[in-house]
Length: 259
Length: 310
Image (tube, rainbow over all chains, first blue to last red; front, side, top):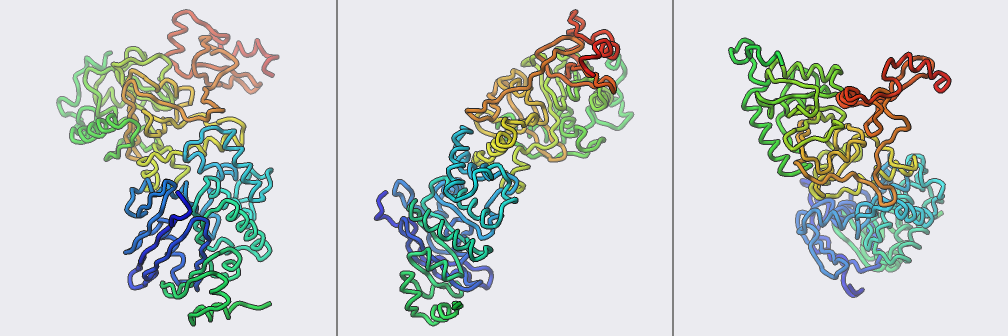
């Protein structure tokens, strides 16, 4: 496919939980290699939207269409489940806020990284191991920890391991749900730095959900501000943050603590 | 067998039990499940497991399968860990001798139905024999994926990479695949199956076996099967191929070098011997004149060879 094709086309996505409108008519397009930030307060529907995009929650209405490597666009909820699951573990990645949700805790770091490779048929131990070592290096984890269990890792290391586990299959689209959520500030900075580097280097598109505007500013090209399930403002990150138009965006920007 | 000549008790309704304990409706239900299992090799078919007069884990699944397929003219053999004379084997054999009045044997070649726990007989099985396994945990993914719904999807969509992760872990931690029993296999290039806790030594015997192999899990309510002449492939890595256990010593009783050996402690001086776990195989070899180092008297022999063991 060429870079002219939209990677993800989202059109009028709605999702209700009973009376609660978690996603209200959300539409946008995501292009290959683009980083889209979704910001908003807790309960504004960011995570629900992300889950819909990643095929984990089916929306009540609306269309989510993904263009695969062959340039064919298809509705992710119209395709067969095995196809969607295949996409989810090859073309896509999902980085959870809590790395314990995204890792196998009783499997060593190497096994965690190698899982996606084995899922698509890798059956050579040496090669899998080699690939795992490469990725340990790339996310700045000590090679000596390759046979350690993730539960012996610090929060920041677990998060980096989760990222490596997702990137090993060479995905084109990564969903991130507050990737820096539970980390202290210095670890956050290092992780963001790493993420920015990897994302640019691999030219992977990212949808990143965060309530931290600094994270959004650092990583994303484009920003969507959500409130009560609806997108109230969207545009280039710098534009939205430097000149917010909507009253809620203005409130959000003005609430950043100045140190 | 003397039991055969005795008047069958179920015929005159003295005990109130149906032939082979289970009622006919239940047997039909189980047979339908067996047919489905044979039609889809390696697929776990749910069945309405019945309460049996022994606890779960003692072979309730295997007994129900045997009860559904056994006929008056069958010859039954029951083994537990390869042996005909352990508690479990003796009890189940007695159970069928009593409730179905079938002939029983210890000789592998004479049996038409063999119920087993933990082993496949050493002697090659024939097309007119059926091997029934007792299975404690039928789901090979159980310890990797706790959600049953997810397990079913993994089977349905053949997403079996996670099984490989388990073997990867073995090599990463111990340098080789250390899974020694219940070694996962792929049946007919489709379903991944737990062959019940048989040693991996027995895995190659399942491949292309002329005998029908049925697996019954009573507590988990699953039946699965390997039809005759079906490919059974033990999972492995290209650079860590599947292999079976080997021993440095031959069987102490019959001198066999090609059978699965149990280690037996002889005294508190470090004396030990290895002997075939398949008791019938070992007995037959000794009857043919093969002898091992401990053939006469294991304990005496171990004392003679003392320095080697102390």
